[in-house]
Length: 371
Ligand code: CO8
Image (tube, rainbow, N blue to C red):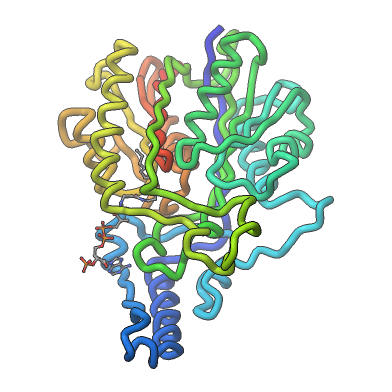
């Protein structure tokens, strides 16, 4: 058997935060902090919070705005994180609700119903609770039979999930699976840290992967997938179920996203360019054959560099579409949003590559051919 992507969907939250709005809130928070800590700052025991700037954010990342589930909490200088009301156990969880929205879009695009789907993989950087798995809840809400499970490979969760689905299809154990990536990045971002407060946004994506046999509608054949990981502490979040076993857990900085951005930047570029080049070589695909690269959406300069290194020349704007200017970094969902929005114009036989990279480190690439 072989596998194909037959549908995609993107759930986009209603609220957007522009860089100017974000920076105004951060600077108001910094002013408050500095006023409250004026004596300690004067005594040299606490560092004053420096101001952020929209110009820096755009120049450093290429991000212009981001979508979030709740804007008011994030922009309240006395709060600086989203306010997402608790839901009763018999109500759909937030992640499940977002994923169901994206999944229904993918199913409509593929012309498939719940009866045609055998499995659900919820692949994301954070899961709203420990158990029951969010994927099983999504399966229940969509009335899909078969099985479902959660997995986490941070920003590479989508490509790792696509390989899991494709491999199960190739092995003959299922004939189709939904790979969903609901990402509530606003909840793990430290909005009070100017080094990273601009980085993330919220979104959910869904990809329907099916056995490539008698498929009628538009689809992309999965020619091959390739995954790699290499341990690094440069992107880390220490939040987890051992939290309450530790002392001084209130408001600890390491319970949110932390990174050594400069190091990540330097290490990502060679690792990802090499990974893509080797995957292409192993699959007998020339870089010159690639019509499109759908890259992880973290940083424009990083993507420009990877595109140039892989193609051996400056990519044309439509060869390597970015969505990060509008969505910011949405972790595992970024490359899938780019694929979902910028793939329908490819012609039969055209080849493209999805590549994710993230904490772990983790890199995943998927070579696709338009049927
Ligand atoms: N406003 C004004 N000034 C600021 C601000 C701000 N908001 N933030 C920092 N500055 C200042 C700093 O204090 C510093 O000042 P000084 O030079 O006096 O010390 C100066 O600006 C430069 O700061 P940085 O060195 O932090 O700025 P960079 O130019 O490095 O940009 C980035 C920061 C954008 C975070 C950059 O380092 C980056 O993109 N790194 C790559 C990592 C990344 O993209 N992380 C995103 C999340 S993780 C992820 O999605 C996975 C990515 C790849 C994983 C790897 C897998 C193989």
